[in-house]
Image (cartoon, rainbow, N blue to C red; front, top):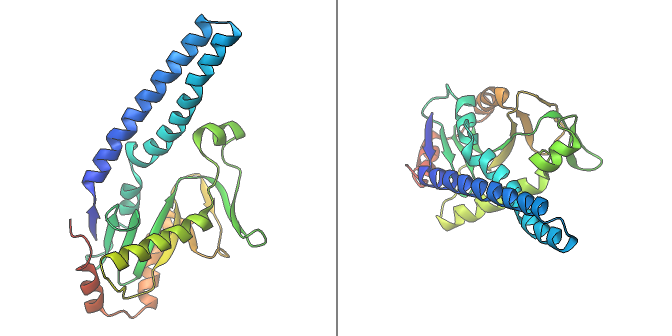
Length: 232
């Protein structure tokens, strides 16, 4: 399998995540020190002015670190999950209109990696993905472990990809589809009734191979389309 990474973007965001982390820790130290050293109500109020943006920076730092600063990153996880596919497949990481896209005999797949764990289900009545178990309330509050609105995010991903194809004047050879990929070892995924294919990372390669057998796509059209996409 070919892998095309936007290394420049990865390295830049890795540095940004480190800077935000240090800034957040610095503000937290200053805010806590100020509140201890100045116990009067007016001075304590000033410490909150420091601690509130520090908390916001901590949340941003957690998000950035999870995505860019921690190894294995999502691109590395997906690459490992798809290891063994031949050169007819190309995985594009942060180099097209969506973070991760697989192009090959299986079609065009937008791969959406999700790190949340617990029992993952899809509630057809509420039309949303739900998470049972997982971290405590405090963990969800401070570690951003609450399940996001996956359905809404998937719609945005499809829109972003459509805009990208229009921008580069590319006509996809197959209708792009989204695959939600949970990669935590503690994720128990059972969402067969979900609007988009939702599975664990260890089942991703088998799913792609199954899709390849079900489709009869023209390899020349696939190669022509890949020629319109980034090559390094």
